[in-house]
Length: 229
Image (tube, rainbow, N blue to C red; front, side, top):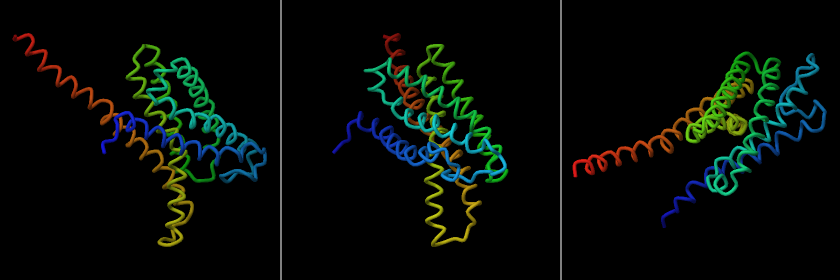
């Protein structure tokens, strides 16, 4: 049985939405209690604002994580364009707030220099892709806006893949390896950034740019034939 094209287009945002909601439900509540002991990551006891910065990052970051998949649903964009624009503004503000707090939190991260560098690069790319997406839609270039937003949300979605890699690594660690947790966390952080970037670029090329290139290639012979005729 052939899967309808519309269904194929809906499965990946639906899967991302379920994953994003699940991770947000797990990661955000510990920062609603106001108790540093509930934090999902180690807190530097000598930095009074470390927990607060994580909370300020987690709340808008979790909101952006949940909003993102719905912004890629073409049917929702077509039927509710105003909702798409409002949600997009909320997403943008959420990323700005979360990235600012992430810079502070990364500076005092107890994961070591390598983890700090990974988070710094993630935040820089997160802000850059957001700015480019905003500039594109302001010029009315919806296609380029979508491309930059795919890149941006791939970085937002690192919050999900980081935890998936970490959980998988911990499960394997119990049976097959004695890899220290710090090294496992380090590898998970870098993988969550790099793999997401690669997957996003693959998706952009294969699902966005390649079909348009094929369409232009098919249209060119037809135009030539029409002129010759």
